[in-house]
Image (cartoon, rainbow, N blue to C red; front, top):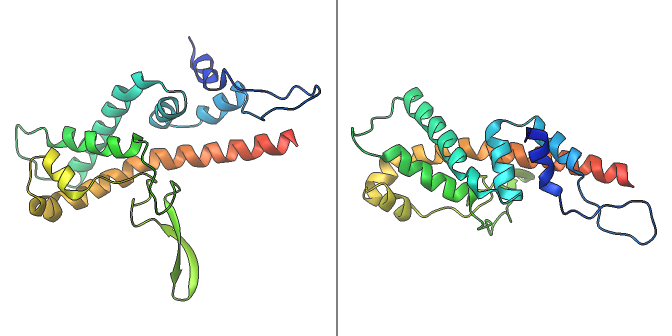
Length: 192
């Protein structure tokens, strides 16, 4: 099956308006979904299929893509990682749990952005609760337990690194949401 055929399955059961009597719920056509995903990175495409098409088989694809990205970050920033430990794999699992989880951030309602009063001016800012990923964050103690570190060690050394990881991987989600929003606006404009 080619990529386009696979991507059109995103909306296989959607109700379409055919111009006949009655009505219905406007939906993305398969070609629109395929077009939206065509310009995304492999990671963002896998995330879309995982989230919206329920393709749980892509979890391992996302894991290895995220792991490679985290290894790149660790190398770039010269992180000291104890030999023989699975530290980066454990951090990858935690970050993907946050990124792919179903728990929506209660502060920003999943948008990753909040309105804040900055010097008397209301501005859109990154949500401080979820750091812009729109999902509930794991507590420091939870991540520390997964990587087998004390909370103090985690906060001093690993928390800034973990925040960098979740921000970086969160870009896949942000790119996906922005592209989906653009396609939906165009689709709705064309159907009116």
